[in-house]
Image 1 (tube, rainbow, N blue to C red):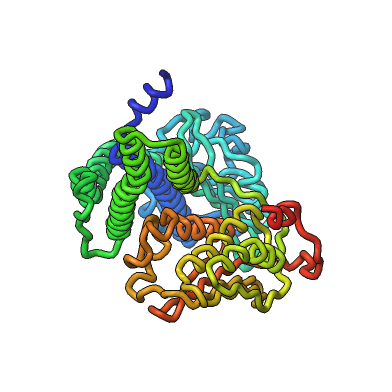
Image 2 (cartoon, rainbow, N blue to C red):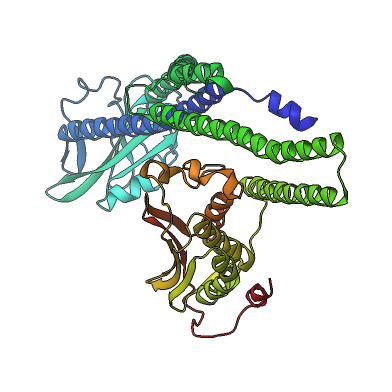
Length: 520
């Protein structure tokens, strides 16, 4: 019950495709957003670093050393807010950016917004602050920002102000003829960069749902449009009924998957049409074949019941009834074999079988019948050949072929039986000098109840199923059966079966099933 509910709640293919397309589209948007955000962040950060480097070069160009003192020339105009009123050497600022002496012109702990003004500090070679911008007091710099430039290496990093604002800093050495006389520190707030990234994130978050919605609608429309030819094929296939199998579904011009599907459906309908035709003909032929012995039996019994007869006449009637019943039983048995074969319910035994010995024993068994009909049965060219198969079924095939040859060969004719090994297959041939088969009838000779001409009438015996059963048995063994015939010159049936190379073909021992043929 739960499985049934689960199946009924399952969405259709169009909905499933839409969901899959939307999920993949969302994943692609997520990947694009991550890559775009990472690339943009790296680009903006690189731009900030480049701007800091350029600003540091500009300020360093206006700073010089005269008599051991740092002098700033034409920098205050370019960098407004720079505090140059402090006397050089008057302040000693530690790595935290706070005043160590407390008596300078710059009040200790002066707080200023790092987003306003220029963040610049100039220190001498001893680490004493010579010039500092007001907002620089809010920064906390690590000791490496001073020690590395004094050793000739530029330092670059991100620090936090007292209010938590991130600031990008660069520290470079001030040199005069290769001698380091001070350190220049320049910073820029990252608030603008963070605001830009936040705006990008907000835009992505707002746009993404609309893009996904449009993508889902577009995916559903595309899926519906793509399935339109399939719906047309389904509608046409639904209109085709069992009695209207001559119709075919339309084949599109474009050679795509729908084209292959249409061809497949047409091939399937064609096979169904052929199967239904064969089934109707089979049922009609079977009904006719079954009705014939029943009609004969009823006619015999009606005559016997209407007219008083003696005991000998009753005995003759019973013999006729028995003969017709036997024929009826053979027909029913053949029909049952073919029905089980069609349903693949006829398992075959697999054992090594010597075809040459099997053919020899079949010929020995059928020889009395050949003598009775005045036909010479010859066995020629029996080469050793071993196959893997069902002995009883192969005996049925060989005896059926020999009996068919004897039936349609006139007295004084010849029937030849031979076995040969050709490459990887064994060939059994049954050749006769009988009445032959017309060329237009050869392709249908293995169909059920098929009789080529009036000469092959029911009066000759048999039910018309022997060759059909033989064809099924040989195909089930992985072989083939063919016929070559000309009217008035006889027929040649050839059976090919795959050889078993690992089994020796020179042993003269018979299987138990083979050894019983001569007793039949």
